[in-house]
Image (tube, rainbow, N blue to C red; front, side, top):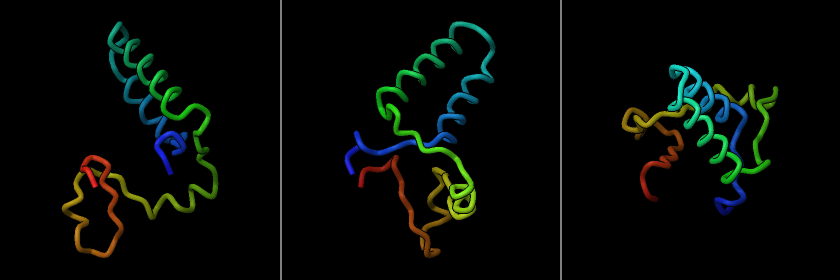
Length: 85
């Protein structure tokens, strides 16, 4: 699947928006919100998956962290988007 076809999730969008919303009101927050909006529109368009009951059932099996060292060698699949494959 090419990057142009990959979806994002409503939860990811919420996390991004929440992170920006906690900044003090002002130009920095406004610019970040605009950047997030533009990035989501450009990168994903309408390809945003909802967080529904099916997603909720899978949620406990997923971990997101940059600390992959603690998970290395314990038998879980690791996808590290921060390192080139």
